[in-house]
Image (tube, rainbow, N blue to C red):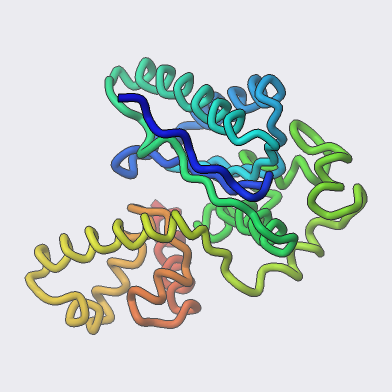
Length: 261
């Protein structure tokens, strides 16, 4: 039976996310990140989509895309994901699905939403404690904005900021006060966290609320959950019922300890 076509959107701006099946780290190696980026570069003009922001993480990728044709967007994502899936399976000597689903797409319905989304995408590696600053991460469009390279030209700058001259660093500093939420991905996050909590309750043979009462458990489990799924520090704080700054300190201690090994 053929799949139903994706629903029509009321906008031409979309936040798109693709994620590895079973939360697998399908982009973990540098060669894999380069391959997915090259597939984007190779195909975006053919499908008449404009990539306004991107960030390729270890187990998922964020894209901010402008497309006036909903079918073209779907065809573009299908093309790059299928080509990448074949490449990944060949390299890893595996078979089967590579991505959790085709992709998730959320329409961007306001100018503020558009900028918040771009800031959120660029800050993914910072929130994951991979780098300290956005411009230190190689596989995002942040550096492209600074140098106007790859997908980012005057036209893209005008579409997002209404100007082709902007101090991106200062601009993003003014737009990082609140966490941006990808609604469809939030639903997936809740499902993932429910699974994790249930498995930990079985492992510890205690209820979740009892588990997180122990400081030592929190120190161990915060980095463990962070590594397992894509989750912000704000969301971690919510699930562990602690302050976000405490989450950041725990993660900093964890990364400092592991970097010494």
